[in-house]
Each structure stands twice: as C-alpha cells, then as structure tokens.
Image (cartoon, rainbow, N blue to C red; front, side, top):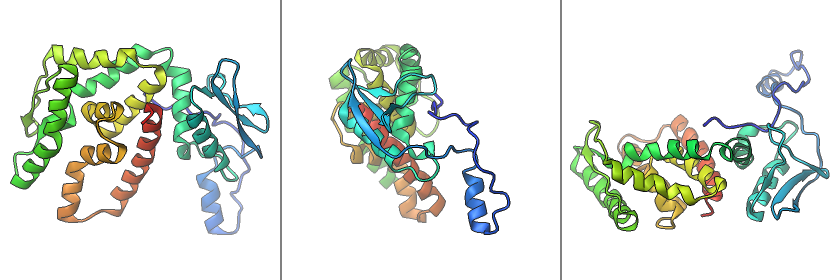
Length: 263
C-alpha cells in the first residue's frame, strides 16, 4: 500500500533559484515541493470518543482525506506530536513515519481492512525464513539456529507448519497453513494491522513480524532475524555506506510500525 501523505504537495513555496550561495540553493531545491512550517505549538488532546488528536496552535491536524488525525493510544499521539515538533522551516513527511502511518490507517486501512490483511498474508506464502542457503555450511547453520525455532513456535501456537526449501526454487505452502495465518489478522484492529503490514513489508517475513506482534521476540531480535543474510554478507565483504544509510532509514520506519503493533 502506498503511504498517504498528510500534506498537499501543491502548496506554494518561495522560489530560491537566485540564491547566491550554491549550498543554500541546493538545499532550497531539495525542499521546493515541501510546505513551510506554519505553527508554533504542538499539543495532544483527548477526543470525545476517547482517542487522542494532534493540535497545531489549537487546530486539529487533518489527514489527506480530511479526517481528523486521532489515534487510539496516547503514546502514539505523543510520538506523532514529537514528529511535528521536530520539523524545521519546511515540513518533510519523510521524517514523519508515524504520522504517515496514522494517515494510512484513517484514509485507507479502516475502509479496506480485508484487502490490507490479504496483502500482508501473501508474505507467508514466500516467507524469508522458509528459503535457506545451500552453502556455506556456517550460514546454513546460522539460518537453522535462528529460524527453525520460529517455525516450531508457529506450528505450536497457530497450528500452521510452513515448508522449507533450499535455494530460490519456490515451495508451495499448504493452503490450510496459510489460511490459519491469515485468520490471525481478522481479530486485530486497523491500527495493529497497519503496523503489521508495514513491518512485514520491511522485514520480508510474516513469521518474524508475527513473532514480534505476539511478544515472542523483541524489536532488536526481530530486526536481526530478518536481516541475517545481510549481516552475514557484511561480515564477509564489509559494509557499504549507501546500503547502511538505506538500512538505517528502514529501521526508523520499522520502529514506527512496531509502535503501531503495540510492542
């Protein structure tokens, strides 16, 4: 699902094309489509329905769909408020993952719950932890030690046994197992589902994300389990700066998703 950004990208900003300083000119060009910050104070207020909304100078924030940006938990609202307070002269939604995810819930997931759940469940059919290396032996051992306990827990907890394959050849999972895992999501609310969908997309693993959601593993462990292969390669060949920057950005998004899961 595409993130639903809270702001109107057509908002006019100053043209800095004639800025004499090349560094400032480049910085201005990078934010040319971003709206200027227009508020001073950010607050959290309880709604009549028992939720928590974000106020900018006393005015409620709206989603792109013109809905009031209100969340069911105060900790989420406070975290979103922190994102708004942290904005500089211009507002960059790329630095506001919790705000974007809340917008996605209100403008998308609430009305398309089954569609979002189906999309998240697809990851179980090609789950990261089900595809193992054929060599070297130490990597095979590391995958087995890290991922097999998750599959054992999954079968014990939900009665769903996923099949494991070596290499990249597709393995068809049993329909009953996939149906059991899809059924787990039906009892969740849209906020938890949105966090799960996002985290699953970032990790590539329904199993790892479900273990996180159920408290089987913590955030750091889940992240490590999902990036076992990348860590192995980095140990062998070293770390690439650009890859590390992308990974760091994804980790920030993952932390936001985990917050919506309530873990």
